[in-house]
Image (cartoon, rainbow, N blue to C red; front, side, top):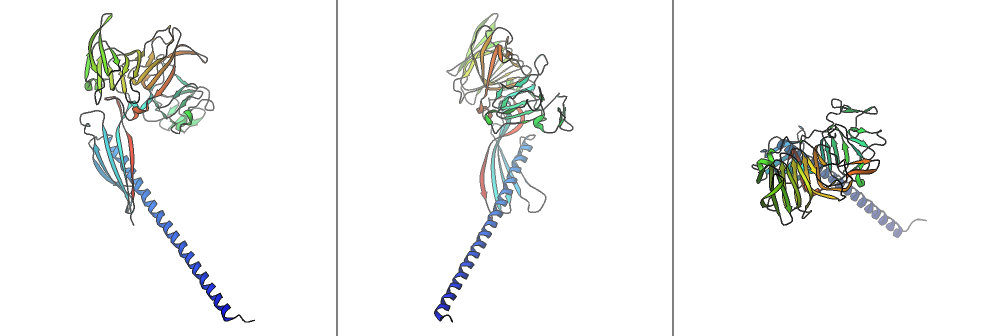
Length: 443
């Protein structure tokens, strides 16, 4: 039966309609593919521009590490024509010429085939206040290694210029590094460690009490910031407190006591024979901060208000609680040429509280009479401890503390960006903040 003209017309219309649909779908697919390809190219250019901007930040920090006056520069990621390039500008803080706490603002713009990416970084000299725990060597005054053990916890950055000894599973919340200076198991030439065979992973450059299977540092509260690496760069401690002395707002000679008060003042007393004589009262809450220096021994206690740095050519005695009036704002740095000694009764149990970041340049942070008397309570430190040698705070038998204190050390995180004024620096540069101003793409 021959189809009618009407049927043939309907079939033709349907065929044309299907062709139109297929053509539309094909065009749509082609458009999507073109858009995806263009997006991919733009993302690639933007990523290249980002890498170039980061390279500019890195170059600026490298130059500033030995030339504080460097202000600008340009460069590229490779020698190939058309490679991504960067342009860097550095603006120093107005106080850089006169103050040791130096700060720079770095702006770096990366360019790749018309795409731009701009980063701004605030860069400063790295302060020792960024460390929760730091030693020049992990040996006692009796020249025996001191172990980190299962009960130990530290929630800030940790470093030693010597090497760490691990017993059990101590826990850390941040980066943990060692230079392995004086470590006979470390081969710096081959960057390897001779223990249970030859180890090439820096995460194994430490001494174990038993073996790697049982003795290892691990993350505190599953912290994503924890890592361990041995064989890292040595960070020398300052030779003396001379810089603090030069920058001090007030200096004293001979043994002095400082009683900090919540009203933002400190009572200064001079030792005369077996008694103390009042010298003066000074404010501690003035901006940008205040620095005291003693050529001799010093005793400190009380409630600190302000941004205070304290230096001594001798030992600093903590003869009472030393705490902040406002823990979210106040900052205290103690730098002793010799030891930092916690003074307390050997027969009384009473917790102690210390709010400060402390440096014992040639000695230790330790408890007086740590191995005599009774258990005295918990030694609470809110800040950081930097010392030449690790000092003792108590003795233990099995899992029981016999004398001295148990430890509760918490890093004061505001120190990372607000260290005490005139506090010693490592000489390295660090990024305090980084802002991505986004990207602008070309055609």
